[in-house]
Amino acid sequence: MELHLYDSWERRVRRFDSIDPGRAGLYCCGPTVYDYAHIGNLRTYIFEDLLRRTLEFNGYQVQHVVNITDVGHLVSDGDDGEDKMEKGSRRSGKSAWDIAEFYSAAFMEDFCALNLLQPAVWCRATDYLPQQIGFIQSLEQKGYTYCTGDGIYFDTSKQDDYGYMARLDRSALQAGARVDMGEKRSVTDFALWKFSPSEARRQMEWDSPWGRGFPGWHIECSAMSAAHLGSLFDIHCGGEDHIAVHHSNEIAQTQACHGTRLANYWMHGYFLQTGSEKMSKSGGDFLRLQSLVDQGFDPLAYRYLCMAAHYRSQLEFSWDGLQAAATGLQRLREAYHRWPHGGAADEAWMQRFRAEINNDLNFSRALALVWELVRSDTDAAVCKATLRAMDEVLGLDLDGWRPASVAIPAAVAQLAAQRQAARAARQWQEADRLREQIRALGFLVEDTVAGPALKPALAGAAHDS
Image (tube, rainbow, N blue to C red; front, top):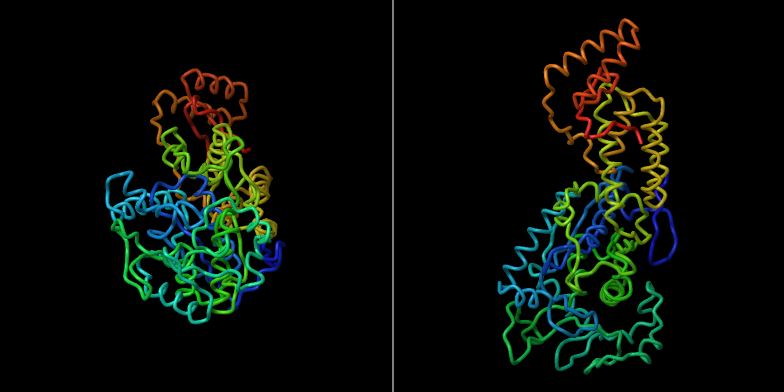
């Protein structure tokens, strides 16, 4: 069954064919570690994790690379303003290097809490300065750069198809530009190397053939992805906001340097909305994963919520929606742990599951199929084995969850044993009477294939939906 993915370059869903049969190169734009990641950022990483798991489910060996931007990302995509790392340092009073370490560690904690698979490579921008400088030198030799008072810039006028993925109208952008471009020749030109300001010393700066300074944000990803995956690899991912600027610039400089568009497929996760606004850090009021934990939510409930909407649709966040996701996840866990071991995954169910996820990662339909399985009359042990196989892709860690340990009073346990004996003797009225006695003592009894299960009444009855 073929895998089909939406390619932002061609703006259509198309069959995935890897460059190297059986292998897939996957590069994902990682965090700029000047602040905590917010849950909108994390939605993109969940989508990318589902993509990787789907590739592996289809038999691909995935070389997954994620960068950490610890220098060069300016507060404006228009190449003005200060470096976000320097801004974070000034805000906190810590060094830029300490800021990078602190927020990288915080990001890794979120990454693990969401059960995201670790990439084969984490690459930090500050570790790849020679590759970035070499890339810029190649562009310079090929005539794609020019020098201004504040840096080395890429000349987008050299490419007729610049901005093709975003379908940019360059003439309209140029005519409508309301920003001071300084010495830039075009509003779409972008910095490859920025010179350190003469009036102040930066914490992160390096010598280069053009003077002391630091790399532009865009050159980092092109250099690092090529270093690990080559100048043309299978899939490049990021958020939808990367299409018009960051990814368009990555493509432009890679076309100029290597003659490729860097990736054969470009995929983008869409925004998380709060009201009518996308979640962002610029306003300073954003939700972290820890914010959800502080309200009593399991991080995997947020993963479940994100799977309920297609990655190419904007998701409206609400606490009610998160509560519904948490309830669904809890019921799924309880159903999974009620079922006995010993079955084998049902191939027919797995084929239907594959059809949904291979249709451009349609995980909302995959979740609907999961619940169809849970409610079905399929053998319980087969259900467990099938759901375990599905969870290799869903990533909900159903095997790792354990019900909360509850001490059952001796009197309740004795009533449950008496009820079970009454049921065995087909004394249904007596069994019902004993059930009500158990309820009066604050417990519910549920009949499962493994025998009666007791749980506190406040937890609510177990359901299969």
